[in-house]
Length: 125
Figure 1 (cartoon, rainbow, N blue to C red):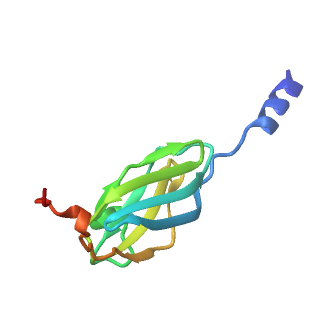
Figure 2: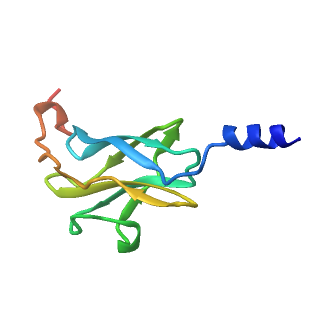
Figure 3: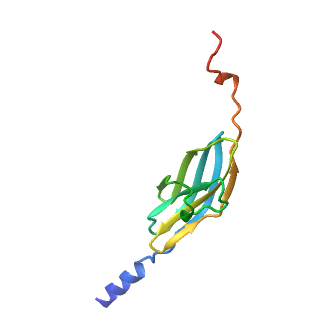
């Protein structure tokens, strides 16, 4: 019995605070961003992307905007539509019972939308 208990304890992974790596935010089209990160831990209870136009290091306590996104395995993804020609600060977060981890803040200014001739709502016949 003692051998079985020792074997079980050796095989158990200890729960650790989540880690966040490979965090990227890029603009797909004027005002639409794609956010990706790798979030690892044995268990993640909450996760997402926090963004702000005023707070250079947004966090869960600052009442900034939060996007839950999708977490498949350790791959987090989110797509967000924002105002054009505006500077945003982005931080990824992941939480479990051991604590919350934040990524380094990323700054991105969305492009100014320039309508093209194809955007004309009243095209000539």
